[in-house]
Length: 165
Image 1 (cartoon, helix red, strand yellow):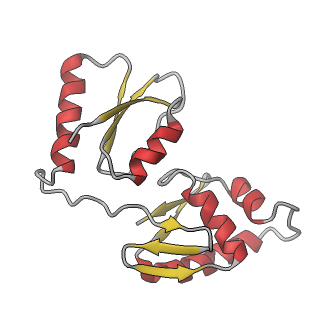
Image 2 (cartoon, rainbow, N blue to C red):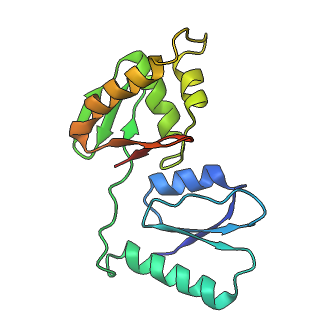
């Protein structure tokens, strides 16, 4: 299986599409900019200054992971939220209420990425909310609803939330 080589962060949209397709990818990163968080075993990154030996080694490792030859389990594909508000993970599914659907859409826009509290509040309540703990309550309810699917919402202290499956 070929490893896709991408520029980070300029090819962010392509990264999300390749992740959704469960394709291995190597991000080439200008270390002066933001560094990516790679939570998928089919993804790695290297600095633009990396030599060809390092790049070849990282690509070979990703290729072996994709083929299941490193003994590391390949992560399940990310959950998918359809147009009717049904969240699917593997063969399981759950219907989400409208507000939780908006929150989950923001969380899944770039699987594995950290979504800030502010971005979630904007997604969930575009007109604004009056109580600060409204997001906390909805995140708690969303966690309970999606837990049986094997999908979790991880809190990244001081930064926001990320979806893990």
